[in-house]
Length: 256
Length: 245
Image (tube, rainbow over all chains, first blue to last red):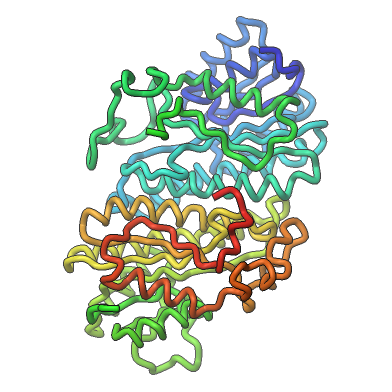
């Protein structure tokens, strides 16, 4: 694709692994200069960044915990210093520990809220002064089908994604005056190298989880680059009149 | 309506809607505990069934549970009714205010469910109703933290309808529209949705607190025995103007 994104600047939180790696890979391939944020997996992020630089992409890595406002602010400052501004924020860094409600302590609840919901809000607010200066600011939040359909294995995760749905809608209305669009991509399952957490995924506790792709409409799983392609489209001028929406990317599986 | 004799806990009885629910449930024959997280009003002191515990703190909710047991209440219905709106923008809100608002609306629902839905399940079953808002789907334009909290509560309800549904606890959600009493809080230059509220509601009048009370009473009653995981919109049809539900 050539989405006319060359030279624009993106921050991709959690952009060094999993879905985030697919997003940063596609954006870099489009000529976007990418700041990849990471927290626990700095080595993976550096390796991923090196692989992108090998293709000629302009990529930096910044270690920041999205739960920490000072670290987030420092990341946005560094991005603007390195690349001259911020045009695209991709809120992606999230935690899915797979606890049922009886396994959530007060501390665990706060942890997931501060990461998945607080992190998205914090990064948005911190990036906003830079996005306002962009000719076409874009905010894309990676949500989940579990912002609408329960998952039956992690109530906290679903709650955060239900919150993200509303954060997108509210921010889209509020920030439209600055020409900033705010949208969500809403993946189902994505085939990634691993997920962080304390249980193996999926935790087959209450119901069977199928991995029989033969019965899935497109007969394959979603790949990180599939999500990256959608994010790149939403970041482009072609998506300039799309705001406040959530685009499901699940290969039709949620229709089954 | 064939409601059996049970105790209902109303987690924040300080609003007109929640008080209307409490009064209706009493008329239906339930004992009602009214909690006031922000402090017991003077008029409630020394009145039966009144208490004041923070709902966004797990230990406080557990303390409320112990208090209820000591007083001889057997909670069989939980009505989560914490609805606190904070007018503040994404751009300007202080981070601690954002979390205070989200916690008051969503964490309180989570903690009340964690403690009381489990108790209800162990007692043989019952009902949870989240007295929530249309703003779990529709943006306000003035209080994004409130909407974020209500979006989270909506997913809490759906997850709990699975988790506790298997344990005999039905979990449902009432989506409250603005009332004459609350519409000023939602006044927004960005979202003039509630402008001329009465004209825009197909039934020709704004929704009243008693309308929510009827919905909650129904969802708690045995007449709703097979209703679980539902979002019941109580708005007179107002949200038919809104697409994205």
